[in-house]
Image (cartoon, rainbow, N blue to C red; front, side, top):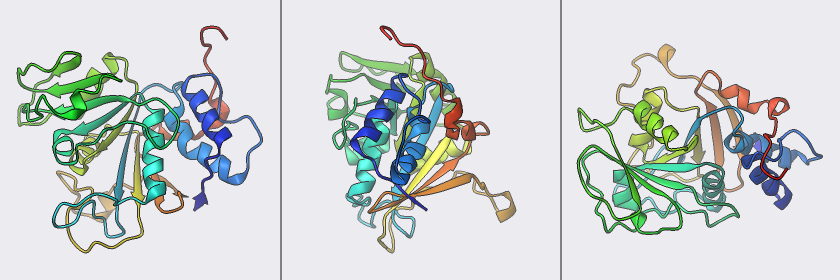
Amino acid sequence: MEPIEVTERVWERLLAVRDGRFCTCCGSWSPGERAALALYGPLARRDLGPMTVAQIGQSLDGRVATVTGDARDISGPDGLAHLHRMRALVDGVVIGVGTALHDTPRLTVRLCPGPSPVRVVIDPRGRLPNDAPLLHCQATRRIVIQGVDLPRPDGVEVVRLAAPDGAFDPAEILAALHALGLQSLLIEGGGTTISHFIEAGCLTRLQVSVAPLLIGGGQLGLTLPHPTEKLSDALRPETRVFSLGSDVVFDCALAPDAQAALDPVHAKPRRVAGS
């Protein structure tokens, strides 16, 4: 397990990689700094095409909430900082309507420097009310993917997709967001939404952040719609393990080409205006 060290210069490099101005391979770094570059570098890179990463924070016994639905502070302080870094490095963050209704997340970047991502809510039946705070902060783009005709507040972009069984095809969601210019995406929640993306084969990487607490009951993190019946058929992704400090993150490669993002030698900065 590799402990990460996100120093100021490491974070400045990662934001520069996000903007296409630098690679992750050059420079003299401590072991902890290099581990941080290895963990966050794949999210920051834009030279390998579209990437979709999911992140879920859970307890040691795989819970994301108590029996009463309390999900606050599942992750420790370093786990929360990790999530905000992920937000800062992607183009857009995607949540299901259940998470939007229950948790009312802001989806902004507050615990590290960097831009807040485009906010995307998956809402097949139009359950998200138009007075939801998520729709009214105009500091960044807001997108609702819905399967019904429902007007949204001014400035909110609506993507209409077919939802034959009350759910969208994750591949169609990604195609629609790529068409809107969002190439690097974070599927932040909830567990049901992430599980559907896993089963559809639409994730490049999955990060499971584990906090050292036992809840004993409550909502489980990941439950696939069609779970395997034999261990021999289970997904066994290539996995790296990092210590965040208060939490441990398992970084799993799910797509066949996910390993390419780990090779810093091939991370070439693209030419940007004025360079």
